Length: 389
Image (cartoon, rainbow, N blue to C red; front, side, top):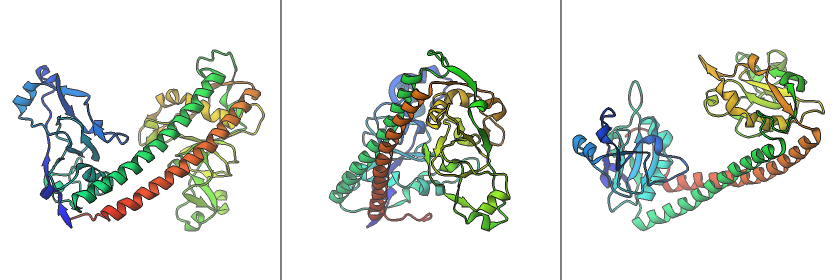
């Protein structure tokens, strides 16, 4: 049986008390905003901002109870959580107070899987929003409560395992960063007094990338990995989503990057918060939004340079500028002087990185299996949602 959410839930929203009125703020009542809904947390117990009883009385705000399913309806659409305590919210929500016929954690998992669908329902010229009417008309499969609880329990377990695997990957990354500092010290302050060299001297060459002409479809039917920022999600690159031919390389500005080079994204919106870097284990080509640091000498190890970049990433990103796209001023970047520790220590660090990457690969494979399993379960439990009513 399928029902509309408006038939089994009460949809409620909120408002924002005047920011110019200090009597409304820094009170004791929880007031949540969409920004506080995090992917790694399913329950909100405490809010960053709090309002006063006077704010509630003057604005007519109504509280929603523990267990209410929070759904952001704009900026952005589709963030989901569950209220762990009574609270109020701003106007960026269409929250769902569940009736006795629907289990809140079942509804939570249903909505958590529907971000793309919910965004497709958004309406608006300046920014998209889903209205109360839209939310009320969303259809959901509604098995008996016992079945809903079973489904939620299964998805809770799988989601918890996925979160654990992601935490393991984060901890392994932090372990290597800590090891870097332990062995080489802070790369900016250089407390160990290592020799310094310009980055252009420690690299055999620095290669730029390019895009073969899209007028030649045959250029994109080869077997040479053509790496772009969308591929830079791991620290090791052994393949890419797109591939090009040798003719494409010969007839474009892109070059073949030898294996064990350090790849860096220098133009992308992602540079607002992170610096994607990686080592390629096979020869690749790169697009124009990237640079490749080719290292074929005995004074520097690619693993060391990779983690050097990760350690100084905040400093690099501080200089990012953008007009049409965020980018690193590479002329300035090339003049950077970096510390060059002893080769012996770099070799020890490289061995540590290699062993850690093996562990990460095993964890990543387990994570991918769990994510595939969850997708299959979501399809089984909820099916495919079509846009429109």
